[in-house]
Structure formats: structure tokens, C-alpha cells
Length: 209
Image (cartoon, rainbow, N blue to C red; front, side, top):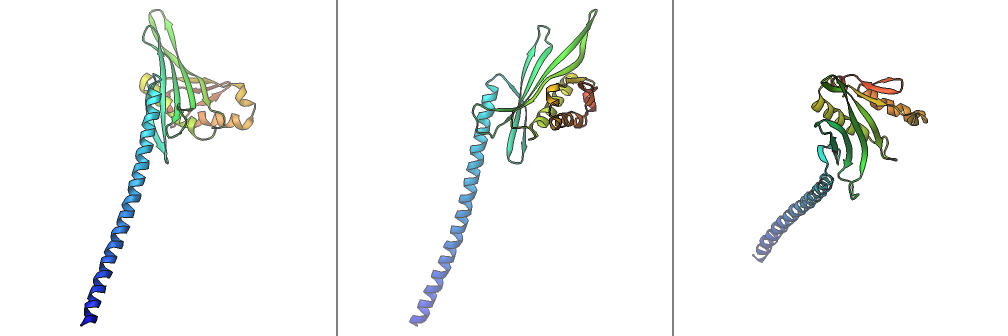
């Protein structure tokens, strides 16, 4: 009789132990999930702080996008003349998840619209890319393409699909043949034609990307 009582007690203890192990596994799983959620929240908080620092520079954020686990943003700085015409716009690409403070830009594009005037008529003749620059050591990372696409979207949305874009190609970029090929490839993959010392897109609506 004592044997059966002990067996019943042992069985109950085994069941209780099994339940405790199951509960322990569940709690460990929830703990891991909570830690991951906390990391995501901390990362998002940092990204928002970085974005806030960018807007505090009187920049307007026009695009935020992700690639794998990285978060990028493009901020623009604009100038207008007394007529209200856009005369200059700078595009800066930032990696929000970068721990550098203040935020460090990885690519810069400077546009200057050129207007033509005849008699009492004035219109946009073309837009010139005055500068297309990546940080030293950051070439080949795709930052230029991200920023370039944002710039083309901006031009098309603000000036129309028929807008012409030109960029004078500096001979400095041609001292190294690989650098020249890489530069030309960026323009050509977006639909620009290389004509002498210029990269030209006759209509932004005809771009490839």
C-alpha cells in the first residue's frame, strides 16, 4: 500500500516537474522575444533621433527606405529666388542606423535649374547636376544609386517628365580608368547618354530606373 502511495506521489512530482520545465521554456522564449523587441525599439528610437537631427538643419526628408537591416534617408536643402523659382537643391543621403553623431552623409547631389527668357516668357531650359559626390572610402556601396533615384523622382515630380538633365563630366574622374567606367555606368544605367564631356538625359520620363 505504501508502495502505491509513493508511486502516485512520484508520478505527481514528475508531472509537476514537467509542467515547470514547459513553463520555463516558454518564459525563456518570451524573454528572448522581449529582448529582441527592446533592441528593435532602441534602434527605432536612435533612427528617429538621427532623423530629428537632420530636420533640425532646416532640411526636408523626402525619402526613407531600407536595405537588409539598414535604414537610409535622403534630406534636401533648397533655395529659391525672388520669383519663387527653385534655383538650387542639395540631396544628402544618410544612413540613419549609423552611430555617428551628428549624422554623416554618404552621398551628395547638387542640382541647379537653368531658366531661359525670351521677351516676356521664361521657362526651364534644363537642370544641371553641378556635383555628384560620394565620401572617400564609401564608393561602390550603392549610396550614389539610392540618392540618384531620389533626385530623379524629385525632378520628375516637380518639373515634369519632359525635363532635361545634364551633367558635365570632370576630367579628374578620368585619371583612373576604373573610376571613369564606374561613373559612366551609374549615368548610363539610369538612361543618360555620354556625349563628349556631358552626361545627358533628354527627358527624365525616359529614364531606365
